[in-house]
Image (cartoon, rainbow, N blue to C red; front, side, top):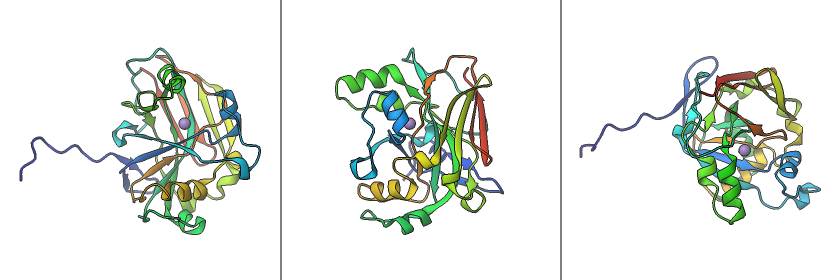
Length: 234
Ligand code: MN
């Protein structure tokens, strides 16, 4: 059988030290920092036992922007927002089921930092009607990402912070120790819903301080001391 058109290339993210990470899917976690949940008008859980279920959504794999490339301002919005996030990259498959946390952690092959770019006006309108967030979240160029860093070179995640500066002013800064669901807990929850696969990326949610980006803005996102990503909205 002949393809009707040339098959699109698999999106790939460079890995520090060599090689690339071929991407299968992008899972995203909503409301994973209490301070951000509150700034969006949602209740933040008082404790881990009251945290309920995490909020998941997707972006298409070809929404990734790599290599510090420029990011075009998207159509259909007057309110593009930045959300700086830890990104976990899975290097192994796991069947759907109840993945235990130790096994979950072993799926992660690398980490990076990314932006969950959001058409906040479209997301807000969808939320108000109880409709899905897709058009607010899963658009072209909505997932700028750094190179990935092998887990062995990242160290203790809970000791790290995320920072986003726009035009050299810090807009977001948060400690990964403040995640409501940490990486193995999120992978456990995802495994209850999906068979996880090598090539899956997980955007882990953003701390407080989200806000608008406009054409000409320069952003610098970092997993502090580990990896940085830069770009310009054009
Ligand atoms: Mn987000």
